[in-house]
Image (tube, rainbow, N blue to C red; front, side, top):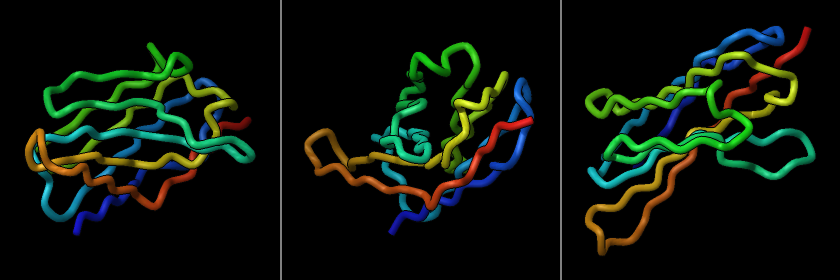
Length: 121
């Protein structure tokens, strides 16, 4: 059983920075992709950034050049460094991992409980 626990959310002024962290417990397979998603009130959950087991990162257009995703395989953690935060970044941020044992195995998906990020003056 994999559990994901996020930390690092909070209140920040526009232009400020926050760093979110997500720690996994349980078995993590070598074929996996970590992701950070967010959901603002009244909106659908959206992918913010993801990073593959090979280290390739992708970002939503709205956060490119402001957010950076990184992972530490040994510690089973993934971080999201968020700079130049704007009010529109306000949302609950969720950590996610999709993983499989082999290329032909089923995919397992796990979610964290979410952490609130509020950008306001």
